[in-house]
Amino acid sequence: MGAVTLTYSETSKGWPSFYSFIPEKMVGMNNYLYSFKGGKLYRHNTNPKRNNFYDVQHSSTISSIFNIKPLEVKLFKTIYLESDSAWAATYNSDMHNPGGSLLASYFVQKETDWFSFLRADENTVNFNLRSANGLGDVSSVDSSVAAAVVLTFTFDVGSIISIGDKAYHGNTPTFAGEIVATTTNTITINTTSGGSVPPGGAFICYIKDSVAESHGVRGHYLEFTLTNGPTENPNSVAVELFAVKSSMFKSYP
Figure (cartoon, rainbow, N blue to C red):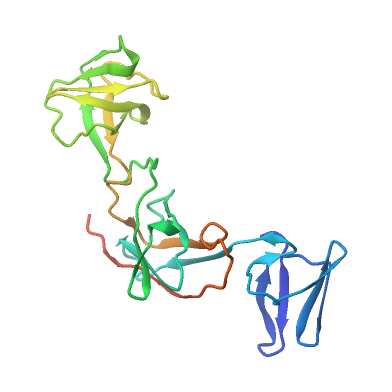
């Protein structure tokens, strides 16, 4: 943690608050808080604009954890905000790291809550998720055209593979390319976007679109951070967040 300003409360006889602004001097006088910064005098809490300290606009962030029944693996499906405004969110778990993120625009207001499904980020590569699938050893490779490398197999590749899936090769998966075509026993990949041509006999696996295939976040816990800043709250007005909830259930392998 960087430098912060701590405030003491006479009522609670403790230090309940941390503030990110660092004044040169502070004083309470006539029911107002005054501070000095850069040789200028500021009076706090005098206008409706929030999170603006010394002419710099900041964001509000809140971090917490859903950790009910910590010994069970759970599938977290949604996030609800009991708030008068939508917030942006990032989240991860012990089994889903890196996790995902949600823009404030992803939330839909349902009655008094702001609701969103939990989903993976677009470029998430996690071979522990169910969006990763093994295919098998490639029999032969035709790499005469880098944008259309044909991988041939001795078996039916099935119908689960889709155009746009990402192919990988090797026991330690290396990105091969995006799948651009399939037949009964071949897949064609485009290796021109940072892919590498797999050698004959290499094991091939593929990852489906991480957003489309998202079904929640699996783990013993879900750690999340909510952000309300200039992007989510352009006018920097006061917002209230009463509670954060999630729909979850026990994960059965």
